[in-house]
Length: 309
Image: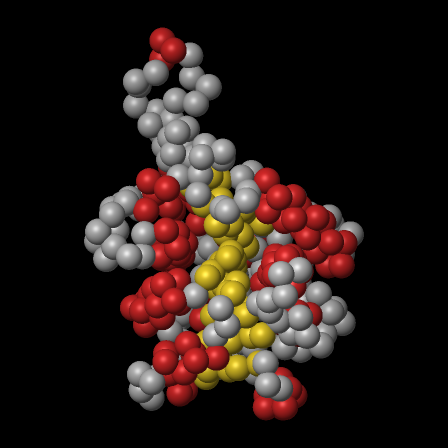
C-alpha cells in the first residue's frame, strides 16, 4: 500500500501500489536496508531495426507490481531482502561516447553508495552494458581477478562498429572483450567476421542455440568455461520470440524459460555474480506478457542471488 508522503490521517486507505519494483512499501524499498538495487537506464540511441527499448525499464517496473512475491521454486519471498528502486537515469544526448561516459560515472557512484548490494541495471539498449561491465572489470582487476561476462543473447555483439558507431548495441561486447572473458549463450545471429574472432580467441566462448537445442550437455560446458567472478548481461532476445516478441531484433529459435532458469540457478549457486543488467525489452502496447516475463526474470535473479539454498 502506497503511504510514503501521505499525511497520517490518510494512511490506511487503499492507495495504488508504489511505482517501484514489485510495488514494495517504503520499508521494503528503503535504499539503506535493501540488499538489491534496481537502476533503470532508459537509454536508446543506436537501435537498428525495431525501436522502443527506451520504454523498457518503466514497463518492467510497472509489470513487476503485479508479481506474486512468493517464489514456489525457492519456497520463500525473495523480496524480504529489500529491493530499492532508483529513479531512471537520464544520460547525455550528445552521442554514444558521452552517454556511456555519463553512465560510467553514475554507475561508479551507485556502486560506491551500495557496498555489498546486488545492482541490476534495466535497459534500454544493450550498448549501455559496457559501462557497468568495465566498472566491475576495473574493481576486480585491483584485486588481481578477471571478470567473466555471462551474456544471454541472440547476437554476439562483437562488431568493431555498426552503422558508423563504435558505441552501437551491436558492438557492446567488442568494446569490452579485451578486458573480460565472455561466455555467450543462445547465439543464433552473427557475422562471419565475428565467428572468426571467436574461433581465434581463447577468452570468447559462444554457445549457439543450434547446439543448445540438440542436447543437455551444453550447460555443463558453460560451467566449465565460466570464471569465478561473473557479471550477467541478459539481452531478452535470447528468449524465443514466442516468449518475448517485444524486442528490436527478434530471431527465430531461442531459449525457453525453464532452460534459462536451470542454468541461472546453478550459476548463482556455484559462482559469485557481482551484478547484472537486463536489456532490450521494447514494449508492445496492449501486449503485457513479455513485460511480465522480464519482470519475473529480474525477480528470479534476486531470488537466486540471496535465497538459492
